[in-house]
Figure 1 (tube, helix red, strand yellow):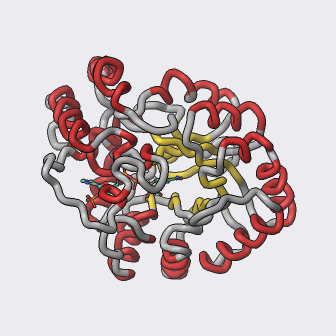
Figure 2 (tube, protein in one colour):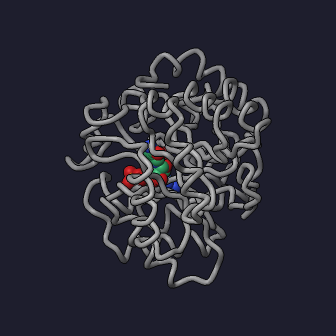
Amino acid sequence: MKSRLLGNTGVEVSEVGFGAWQIGADWGTEMPKELAISSLHAAVDAGINFIDTADVYGAGRSETIIGEFLKERDEAIHVATKMGRGSAEWTDGYDDIAKAAEDSCKRLGVDALDLVQLHCIPEEMLKAGKAFENLEKIKDLGLIKHYGASVETIDEALFCVRNSSASTLQVIFNIFRQRVISDLLQAASRNRVGIIARVPLASGLLSGKFTKDHNFAENDHRRFNCDGQLFNVGETFAGVPFEAGVDLASEVNSILEDQLPDASLAQKSLRWILDHEEVTTVIPGAKDPEQTRENATVSALDSLSTESHSRLNQLYKEKIDKQVRGRY
Ligand SMILES: NC(=O)c1ccc[n+]([C@@H]2O[C@H](COP(=O)([O-])OP(=O)(O)OC[C@H]3O[C@@H](n4cnc5c(N)ncnc54)[C@H](OP(=O)(O)O)[C@@H]3O)[C@@H](O)[C@H]2O)c1
């Protein structure tokens, strides 16, 4: 597993990380704790040392399971969590953020959080700057080692790059969301801001495994938020309507047919992200150890050809960009 420097933190993290939303909730039937822990072991066994979670994933369940897991391993594992987002309200207040940091420390069983990311707080709140001031104060107290933000739009990301001391930015970045390449990557890299690529498989669409009649469980966000009914539609299928996404994934597959013959479309899609050197780490979510292992091996794969990149960019401009819904 290769590693990359995480923004200005001085910390090297694995270029494939582990997305831990699935361990919390919202992906159908609750993932049994044993399965979650065995996925985490599979990740670390495969060289992954970066885990992304949030205080709200399963109302603390994801952090609590990760905390239990950390006790079972001696390796240095960096856990990024998020805060600022409640089920119905957001906060940038000092007391709220300090309390959230203390609570996350307790659940994770650590004295200080490796990385705290503002969790897609509303744009006006983000741009008011109080949240970053408070994170800085809490960092001075020693509860947080580094901080950054998870954001919805490129404009918000650029605001953070230009107006904050954020070490990292978490953005939706995948073959279905390519504006990040032209509008963000270089600015972030110049300012030594690490890029964490989330929703890298467009919630699984970019594995190419779905047919249009696929029936997601009622409590899976790919059913209850497929058109943005509950939160930003971009977090589900990267904002692409499901049926259009199935067709587009098939076109992506045709373009990449002659690349990396032994790799799955999921692996090729993750490889596409890592081919952008400004990205620090890609954090696919996984439902089991097999997916985790498959995703981790992408670090060792060759890059896709320049021609494949340009064909995928052309496909994006001609057919995908206009399909993407939600704040972007
Ligand atoms: N606002 C935020 O800050 C925010 C929002 C969203 C996500 N995130 C973070 O980003 C992480 C990744 O995003 P995501 O989980 O939403 O989406 P994703 O990584 O694009 O998709 C994950 C899903 O893809 C499928 N999958 C994974 N590996 C596969 C493989 N090798 N082959 C076939 N299918 C595979 C699984 O679905 P099946 O169950 O269908 O197999 C899995 O649940 C999350 O876990 C979370 O840590 C943050």
